[in-house]
Length: 222
Ligand code: NDP
Image (cartoon, rainbow, N blue to C red; front, side, top):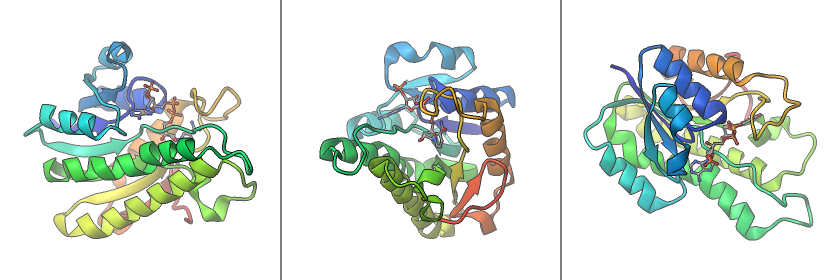
């Protein structure tokens, strides 16, 4: 049975990814931070694992729990936007926290699980156009923009380092999506954005590895 590991699978797009992969007959391994927050994931057909991806001890525990399990896709979905990010008000500790969750954790997850990849052998991350130099016309959001730009470089780097092992990587852009993070004014439903990203991962080839791909399948400039 194809298997996907999804971080931050208790709400938002992570939960929707869990629903859609479970509906396609995949084995879904989902992570939550709060042990009490796994109910929706469980009802969606996912197996619940507790992991704060920014905590190396919890990542090590997750790896131990999944020892010997073959995984087709490691999907780094968990992310935070952060607070106090305007010029003149940037909080150093807050900035580093966003980088820890949005950029460093996907790299550490890749290090932890690269050896367990099988079948499709994909490491994906939900990035954002806010991390694209080419898309930045409004400034602000220092931590989030910097963290997603860093994530994009991590994904590109992993494509080069892990390509010889047959591993494909991709930075996904979901668009602006109605979730707790995206807010109520966002134009896209999670189901639509996630369905698009599921298709992108299903169609991913060696030639696409290391690319930045929108939910509609178009390749984006960095
Ligand atoms: P939500 O805020 O709805 O959900 C975020 C998820 O990430 C939650 O499950 C949350 O867990 C989890 N999470 C946060 N920090 C950690 C951590 N340290 N360890 C483990 N899990 C953590 O966000 P979305 O569903 O909107 O976002 C999903 C991804 O998509 C993010 O990476 C985001 O940056 C990206 N994105 C979102 C856009 C949008 O418009 N919504 C646009 C572009 C990109 P908990 O419930 O415990 O907080």
